[in-house]
Amino acid sequence: MNPLAVQLNRLTLQNPILVASGTFGYAKEMTAYVDFAKLGGIIPKTVTPQPRPGNPPPRTVETASGLLNSIGLDNDGFDQFVAEKLPYLAGLRTSVIVNIAAKTNDEFRRMATVLNAAEGVAAVELNISCPNVSGGVDFGTNPELAADVVRTVCDAGDLPVIAKLTPNVTSVVPIAQAVADAGADAVSLINTFQGMAINWKKRRPVLGNVLGGLSGPAIKPLALRIVWQVAQAAQIPIIGVGGIQCIDDVMEFIVAGASAIQVGTANFYDPGLANRLVDELTDVVAQEKVESLTDLVGTLQISRAQ
Ligand code: SIN
Image 1: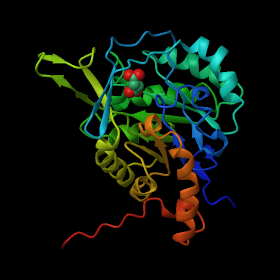
Image 2 (image 1 turned 120 degrees about the vertical axis):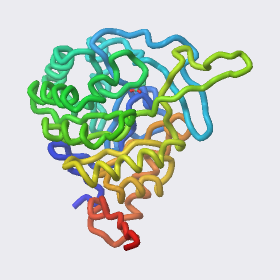
Image 3 (image 1 turned 135 degrees about the vertical axis):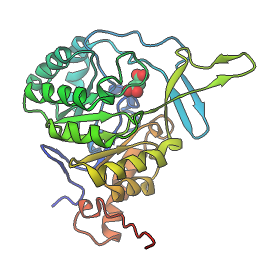
């Protein structure tokens, strides 16, 4: 038995360490730094039906313990991804989870249909949570719209479906439950928090698009809170993401209720981290004297004063 194996409904991963969309390119860029075969899976940069030039620069700025980005889903479009990026990704000895975004259900259906027919795709992650494009978060902030997209993609074939949700709502719980009821296999919690940076001397915002999405260690407590809240209330496996940069961060997400995690911003400054975390997880399983890492999922104990 593989003690790190993870089952997210229809999706099986060899271990729970994934790399987050938008922080790992299309994998080829990371060849020199990462042993892909060791990872639980790779989630390449979001692809959209048509090519997108992205937002005006500057598109990134460092903040205290964080990174604010306003990339705007810059990509060469779905057809080019399938023709030129997917053949390489499909040859890697790890699970490839293709991340897609679109403005209509029909566009989601078209991409999902093609991915279902393609070789080497383990699952689809729906980016219904990008804060940097108009229409980006619309699906993800409304339970009915989010559920419709999930249903549409589920109907397009048998590939497991993951919904990546936005934290920029009053509560993520009803949205997580809605996508669970619609057939999603898992939710990725969470995408970035909308924020801004200002150069007050110039009286100007720093980012070309004014607002951006905050990621990195600064958001870890917020991500943990949302993972825990959703784990308490919704019936769906959770992939935790937000500021993970060491094994203790991983385990905090696991005990809070995540079955798997994504390393995101840390890939930019510590690309070997995801590989190391896999080794360190093996040590945790031994130290905690459990048969499987899944025995530790959601084991947080809360004792409240009476
Ligand atoms: C972006 O391309 O703007 C970032 C992706 C995202 O936040 O979903």
